[in-house]
Length: 342
Ligand code: UDP
Image 1 (cartoon, rainbow, N blue to C red):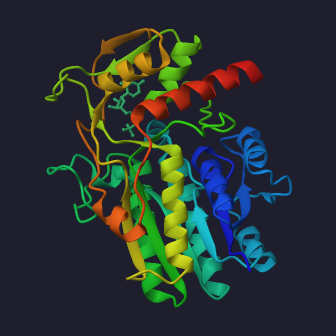
Image 2 (image 1 turned 90 degrees about the horizontal axis):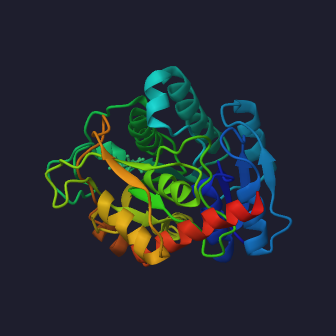
């Protein structure tokens, strides 16, 4: 019998790519989302890519404890991947309570339902933000977490801890936290991708929206960092590669391959790329000129972070495969697809 995976926040950017890869790997998927930060574009795209017109979709809020419990009653869930969360760093500083209540309560509801329904494998979508400005690079999973500079980052650390403590206390719950570096790009079909609401906070959607003419000019935040070209270094991970890491982590859990009941993996490429390099690569691979200017540093940005990926490579048998160029071409194809279809 096929294993069933519940994907909370499954209609969003990462959730939709993960759903595609899970289905292609032979899992049954239940997509659940409250649609607070997305529309049905990506869910429809997932159905098209996979041919699964009957893919279950449940519109629900994971802060609704009874609804989460009902879901675990209605379906036999072998694993849950929890994406449902708010993710805007700036907004979290302005509205901390909104972030703490949504991100923590929804996750605790999932864990409580998992506990009361006889246990479950739980994959939490964490972030490299937990490392802050690390002293030693690249960061390994042993690199100490640093106090977060935003409520958003705090919720990632807190949810990791809640998962760690829950697997220890409750029999039958196993957990993996995946710490994402900078997910970018889109599915090669250009049927799903990132759909930011309003002005994008993240670099790549800002680049593609500038290239298509939706934004006038990209601001590159800071050119006086002590890096080779003066701009920040990040580890940009292709969204499909990232999605495949989830499939590897789920199969490790459902096949009883975990070495501890709670494990953490970095999900990155291990390759630092500067903001300026990314911009010039985008121009080159897509054969266009981007309007950009250098402006002051953005408060809260770390200068450099990239992943040591050895643990994920060895234990998950997973490795990032796509080149930055391929990823940037896919991001641009998605932006053009949106322009032609909206
Ligand atoms: N960045 C930029 N201009 C933008 C958005 C981002 O120069 O409009 C830079 C940002 O300062 C950082 C990098 O791009 O160095 C990645 O930022 P993003 O917000 O995408 O992810 P973060 O690393 O902050 O999670």
